[in-house]
Length: 240
Ligand code: PXP
Image (cartoon, rainbow, N blue to C red; front, side):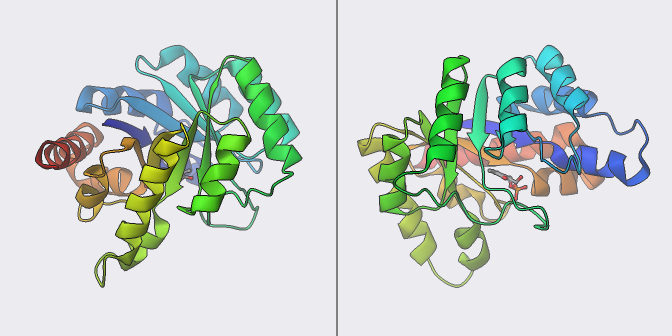
């Protein structure tokens, strides 16, 4: 199981003061020392946290792989094709949202996502689509030519304390995505408390986790926060 750490909130903290610390490049190094398999950042249209220069600097400095999250906007897709991260994850993006809300609503003739997927793939970038764990949407992602889907774990993150319906939905979706020939990733809202049942789903090969790791880094340091998440993910995998 690959653990990719989303370090957007390192840049959120820096942008709060419009200064030069904390530096996402140093943060990525700490994550890698703690056992991250990849570094994820979201270059938003409003540039509220990660900036273009961060993406370029991370592309040069990251020793594992860079996963760039982006909306299917022409300007951002162009930047991604120029920077050429290892992976691009297409996400829905609304300006006023606090964080990515819901997966991509893939329509049968979704020309925007189809074209963005094709452009990124032509640039040699592995393309993943962030979608809800919905069987029909998974089939559309496969039709659109994605290599992978990232299953939105937000519903699970909101409801795991009170029942396992969302976990069962994730399990069904992961199995279906695999049958459709897609690599299966997952993320959003995963924490030290709720990550293990998701990490134990055999078809899931990559987790993208940000907020809980950066939050706990305040107390434990970033390297240690990643190490503790790594341990939980590896344990869940061993026991499954
Ligand atoms: N995956 C995607 C597509 C996201 O947009 C985010 C949030 O930026 C994450 C994973 C990580 O979510 P969280 O910060 O809740 O761990």
